[in-house]
Image (cartoon, rainbow, N blue to C red; front, side, top):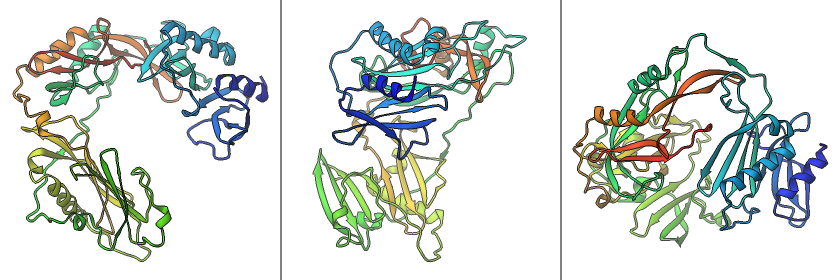
Length: 461
């Protein structure tokens, strides 16, 4: 198939008219191969992008979201798979003959269909082979990712441990963590209420089938102490570091108020931007909720032109604490500080998590970034958490960790899968699966033993 033939075939999957193609002016570094933009002759705007390898084979194809016409109509599973299969047959005839359906997953309002190769002996799917297709619920192709043809090195073990032995090792590295969490739409059986639950923490995601060394993940969350300042400032602008700034404009939208501040208001009046995700070194943006609580700060720390000594981490820490205790006078009781902030470019980063009766609450992290040179709060992001949402939770668990592990053990089984080790090496492992359940166990109620599941999202089903 020539490049022009490929283009003509692809545009039949784009809900637009009068299109042409051109070599991408600013190719995406993440996308492999030679990239081409498909654009509208009418508006000159891109409607899709695709890439090919050095032999002209299609590697990637994606249609712009605004081009895809949304529909309330949802195709059935078999109809969506048929749509995906037809695309594979058209553009990847060899894969159509040799690959098999490996997974069909629902992701929000979209679906993914993956066709992959299998090994010859065990007939297990090989990760990152074949092609993955993303479809809208009405069956429109949104994105295609084709994995490179490669020389796969499949390592069959000489000796294998049993599934029961693998399960025993897997459970040994399982650690239930007690926390307070909302059972929201992330879970299959949800009601939105906060509960005391055990979160299932997997320290070993898989067990080598040959009985070899197990990779065990260490605890990524380390709590460190923090203190209340001797005197908390009462002026928010002083705490943030707005000295020398003037308020340019403010905007009320969707129960929020956004303020834009600058040290050069007359010079950059036309650059006023109320998008809190857009960072401008000349601006400082503040976002408040309808209760006038600070929600977000967006700014950028620029190193001074002259040689200037940065403030120390201790001073930056005090600035972060000033903001924290201004917003929450009982922050030392409501929050815990977690390690792992360090330094990112020109700022010091501090992260905090909610707690209740010394038990962590699963909620958005409060993050505060302090400029190394200016001492300003350059970035702040948090979602307030109303105490009434969780204070009803009885924080003394009825079930022990051992009981919870046994509940989990009764439903989990181990199955053989290929694990990609490096670019093209595959080794055989045992991975957990829940054949009797609709999803995957993530939480177990610490009082009632009710299990909470998420959708099965593993690649190969």
